[in-house]
Image (cartoon, rainbow, N blue to C red; front, side, top):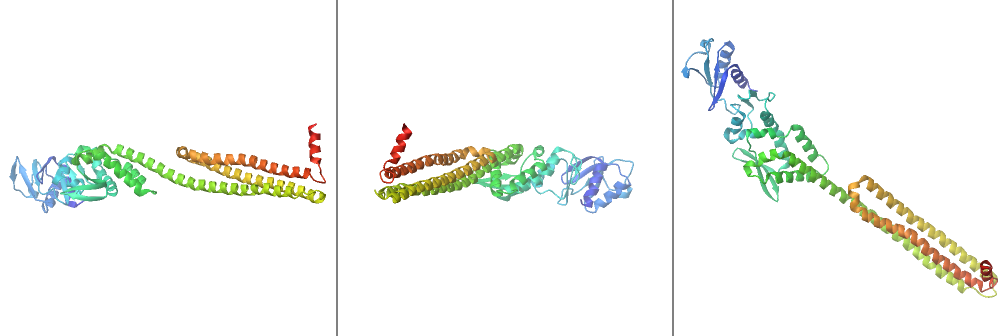
Amino acid sequence: MSVQFQRIVEIIRSGRLSQVCGDSLRVTIVPNLRIKELLAEVHDANAVRFFSQDKEIHVDFNDLDENSELTVSIAKVQGAVFHVSQTIEDFLAFQGGRFFVDPPDNWYLIGEDYASGEDAASDIVRGYLRLPHLFELLKDISDFITTREVTRLYVFLVGERFDLPIICQGEQLTLVPQIERLEALREDVFGKPRVAAKRELLKRAMVRHFKGATEPARFAHLLASFSSVVAAYEAARDNFVSEFEFEKLNEKFERKREEYMLKIDSVCSDLLNKVIALPVAQAIVVSQYKEGMALANLALVFGSATVALLGVAFVSNQVHAIREIKKNAVRERDEVKRSYPDLYGRIQGSYGAVIFRLALYGRFLPIAVSLILLLSFLFSVAGYNQVSPCSGCVADVLRALCQ
């Protein structure tokens, strides 16, 4: 705060009926030693004149009558170094509203009895002091900033250009959001991850709320609907994050589903290739049975039984592999359901299809392969029944069991 500005503020607060006339200040005072000193010091940079009953008097500062009331006029109180205004409305209307975005270093409001740097007394002044925080957010959200005469414009490019000029009435400054709320919004938007996407969402939410108003009314409309802007942004952000998480989850599942399908195809292909060979092996065994070669026939039927047992072991191993794949798929499904309950419903069908296929193969393959193994082995036994050393022994055993 400049020394000259401090002197003028002290003079105003020591007097009464302070009024700004043009760029001069008129104050009614009763001079004392301190006031005389202040007036003399102020006069060096700002011309001081004295009036008594609306008539100018010419008197030295030290000769001022300390027992009589007079009016003091101080010139040029609305400069670039400091500015004195009657009200906040006059202050904001100065030069077409330049103080909305470019306030002087020192300023004083007579009606508010407020000097810059002090604790604000009214809601309007407190709102004005919060404007820089809002402007900082708008600067980071907008695409660029320009000016029109003394008015600053924040430009938003959303398909087309939207200009947001900083124009509003003094009483509307009470609607400027609290600093804590602005900082919380800033942290949300510019906190990692996906900063660019969140910035775009907030920009679009702002444009939707002020573009319906005329250009001069946009800033006031934005202040009045700021809560709605934040709510719209948060809804869009949540939806975006949900979609983003879903895409990640769906992409991850698609990779896992492909892995499951490859594993299933590998297991089933291997199993079917082996199973197809079993009937062929048993057919070869049957073709080798010969009458009069008892030991060879016995070795063949023993080999047939061994092949059947090995087939059962191999099938059991492959079925176990399918069931392990199913367990992993079920475990992953339950984990997704627990961790992403809102997203799970959208991929539930895909998980269900994989698990159903695994369950079907886990049940159908053992039955089908077991039947093939059993029938192949029975053909081998039937062939053994017709040659020595059996020569009908299998048939005799079956008849005995049936009796």
